Length: 121
Image (cartoon, rainbow, N blue to C red; front, side, top):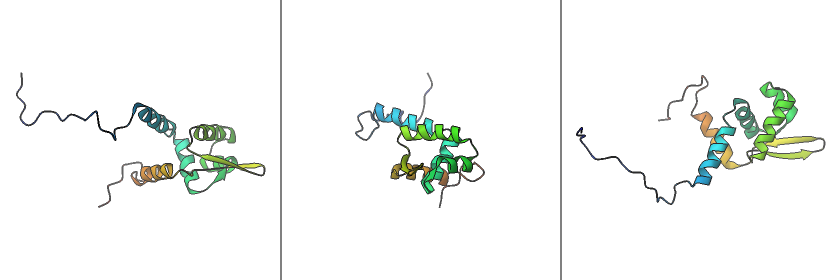
């Protein structure tokens, strides 16, 4: 048996009251899975900056209106975006401050070339 110097392994407390619950872990994983699509992530980024209708969003991301509408439906069902009807148009937006913060954090940590940006000093 090998002799390892130093203290033993650090155990993660299982009774930590701030530890996420299983339902929280599953919900977070589902949200990250939803945002793992570059098209949906782009849509969320756009809607975090300005509300828009499906035709405008489709043009901005280069997808068909049908495909964009399907992405918007998934995001809306998950509660990531909201939809408000005005006349004949439905405008989509990100209004949840937690989602806005998450999107801001993601893109402030990734450089334009796709590499991880250095931490600010």
